[in-house]
Structure formats: C-alpha cells, structure tokens
Image 1 (cartoon, rainbow, N blue to C red):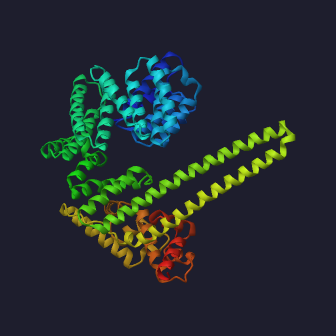
Image 2 (image 1 turned 30 degrees about the vertical axis):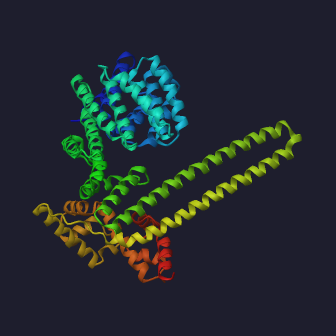
Image 3 (image 1 turned 90 degrees about the vertical axis):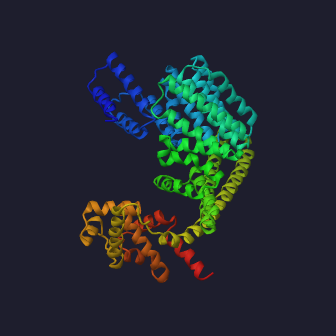
Length: 551
C-alpha cells in the first residue's frame, strides 16, 4: 500500500505520449518521490534505479541523480551524497532549473563539510546562498547558513558559527512558513549540541525549551512530513535531559527523559541512541548497554569503519567501566582504537592518491615545457627526477606506516578470535516459546558439531533439516533468531571456527589441507570466509599464532 501510488505513476509513464501530458506526469512523479524520501529512502532509490534502466528514462539524468543524493542524505551515506550531487551539477541542463541547482549545491556543501573539506564546503555554500537569495528562498538560505555554521565549528571559528545560527533563529522564528521554521529548528539543534560541548548548560537548557515551543508552532501550522515533529521533539528532549542533568536539575532531566522515551522516534534503535549522552551523564550504565545492543547488527551489515561506530564502542566502553567490567571496557576501547587506525589508513591513502595526481599533472607540464624549450631539457629532467624521488619517498613512508598499522590490526584480530569463537547466542527467556526455540537451536547445533556434519562440502540448510527433522523454514528461523546469520553464513562460521582449532593443533598442515578438512573445495572461498568473520587471513592468523607459541 505504501508505494502503490509511485508504481502507478511509473506505469502511467510507460504509456504516456510526449508533450505536455508527459511533462506533467514527470513532474508529479518527481514530487511524489521527493515526498516519500523521509519515510522510505530505500524504496525511492529502487524506483529511481528502475527509471534509469528504461530505454527512454521518464526523468532527466540530473533529477535522478539529485533525488538519489537526497535519499542517501536521509540514510547518512555521505560519500554517495557527494557522488550524486556532483553528477547532478555536471549536467548542463541543471542550470536552467534554479531550484534543483540550489538543492544540488546544498547537498554538495553538506557532504564536503562531512568529509572535512571545509574550504570546498564554504565555497560551495557561498554559491548556494547567492542562488537562494536570487530565488528569495529563505528556507534554503537558512539550511546553507547552518552548514556554514557547522563548518565554522569544525574550523574552530566558534563565535562566527554561533553568529550564523543566531541570525537564522532571530530572522526565522516569527515566520509562518513550515519549511523556514523547520530550518530554524535545525539551527537550534546544532546550537544546543555545541553549547553542551562548550559546557554552557544553562544556555543549552534555555535554547532547548525555545526549540520545543518552535516545534509546537510547526505542528499548529501543519504541512510537515510525517514523523518530522516527533523526531525534532525527541532531539530536543534528549539535549534538555543532558543539560539539566549536568546542571544538577535531576527532576527536569528525568521529565525530559520520560518525554523522549514517549516519542515514536525512541522506539527504533537508532532513534533511541540519542539519549545516550544523558544516560552517560546520569551514570545509567546498564540502560546504555540495553540501548546499544540492537544497534551493532545495523553497522555490521554495512561498513563499521566510521565515526558513528567508533562512538558506539566508546559509549559501551564507558558503560562497562562504570559497571566495573574493566576487561570488557578495555576490549571495547581496543576495538575503537582499531577503528581509529582504519580511519587513519583511509586518510593516508587519500593523501597518497592526491600526491599521485599531482605527480601526473607535473609530468604533463614538464612534457609541454620540454617541447617548447628544448634548451632547458636537462634542467627540467633534473627537477623532474628530484620531484619523482621525493614523491616516491613520501609514498614509501605512507605505505610503510600503513603496513605497520596493518600488522598491529592483525595482532589484535588474532587475539580476539578465541573470544569471538567463545561467544554463544544468548538464551531468550522472555517467553516459553523463545525458550523452546533456543532449546531446538542448541540441540541442532550440538548435532551438527558433534557429528561434524559441516565438513561435507554439500552441507546446507536442507542437510540440516534432514539431519534434525526440522522444516527448512524452522531451520532458517532458528539460525536467524539466535545467530543473526543466514543458514549459509552460519555453516561457514562453523567451518572457519573449526579451522582455527586445526591451525592450533596441526601447525604442520598446509592451509589447503585445513580448508579441505573443514569442507571447503576452493582455497579462495576459505580465505574469503575466514577474513569475513575474523578480519584477517588464515595465513596471517597462523603467523600470529606461531608468535604466541614461540615468542
């Protein structure tokens, strides 16, 4: 039901002739997709993929890329936001569509700021503000000023950043336009976060209450997307709770916490995470771990090398330390450090690529100069040689550093393998049905391991069902419920865990022999699965294991 109207529009487009009618339907389709992005970004992206695959796409390329960028912004996948904003701006036809042009510039400035390209973000923002003023688009201007404020905070220009935000709040709070008020609310949100970071808790509390009044005004005006004001209130209550707790106003903090938990946004794992600062401030360590537990699978399905995952590990580390579980806390801090190292490697790789690009440009310039002035050939070649030597030296240094970091990561990963293998699915004791299911799962796993069924290369879900007498659907349900894996992934996990045992017990065996003993036909498949579960190759693990045995 949710996306039936979108699909209906696509079917209409397939049978609509050219001319005004087609243009009108195209416009309706773009507006409908835009309206659905907040609630269903993945569905919108899927529809855009279908449109682009058409022989004669029913939306222009710049609009497809722009809508994709907006959808990925909703998902906070900023590398894709930057990619599609640039693609939209590269289209010659976008210049004749000022609103879309402004949207693309705004998206690009946000993505550039996210990746630390402060100079690029400000330059893009200036262009966007000029375009917004020509269009008399206050909502867009406020949005861009907010991005400039965030960039200024990143650059350490905090007073300037607060001036940008105060300008938005003072200029837009009396507006009757919902879009403008929404951007004022966003400016309040940024300001309150930064006031909290600056230990200006009284101001943060005051601004939080003003934001709630503004959100009430947005509700009365109507027209905001579904769930928007609920989410805005959740953000406001979370920050009010943190500021009040730091001021010692525990009753106010608790009331704000209760109000936050009453929002719809607090019912999903990502939304609930916004209250963690308050829980840290108030020392509610167990509550933190309850909130963060459902978030980990959401990260492991994508890319864990990011700042949000690092923050999650740090929060859990602080919570474990608060509970006196110092070993667990140390492990979490180690994982966070590994994430930080990975982010450092990515940064260094990007710099090396930039050096390579500069080198290529220099080579071009030197070739041109050589053609124009042969008399200076020796001099130019000497300069080029020195430049190449310096660049190679720099690249070698960067590669050497990256290699050392990689070795350190391998050591950490090898140490964690036994801990990972020792982890077992948690017994679900909420209901009799869940306890019964866990018993079935435990019996199933015991049979598979005791009889070494997984060693067969052809062992699969059907084999499990046949061996245990369970249905295929029940096998999938049990494995998904208690291991958070698909049947295929679960079998592969058992195989690589068994291979760890063989590596320890039989150091004289070859990797191929170990892979074959675990049920793998191809060495490459074994390597891929081992690396997926443990973060390093079998050979690297054997090397680290031999160091442990023979230091």
